[in-house]
Length: 163
Image (cartoon, rainbow, N blue to C red):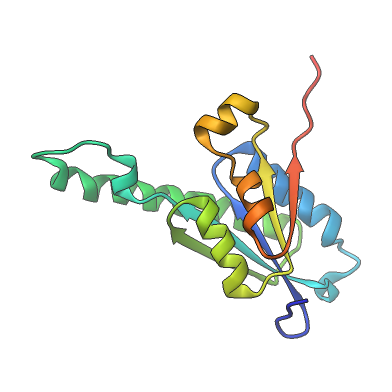
């Protein structure tokens, strides 16, 4: 088991979805109770995988060089908003032993690399609940991490709301 300052490391992958927010809140509610305070067994690393501007812009030819800095600026603003929301959740749940990282790249690789870099013993990801066809087309971050990460992977599914 990996440890930092006597604590094991838990990496939590986030994005801009409700599923991600739910997974972060659920993790704090179940592993970081107020009674534990600073005695929680985990140090948390919250990781957001920021897409590169070139992966978002699929244009080629003249004018692309002018568009990329604008797209990159918007992606940085989005990353700041997502990390800001995660920080608000940490404050509301009284979780203070947290590192926040924004790493450019594909979420699957970024999260698995974060696990290795921090010697994490647990990786937490949310589940978007895609069906089989969407998972094949879009790729499933949670499925990839469950098979590739060198630690325990906890996939937190948001309950479906019955109507």
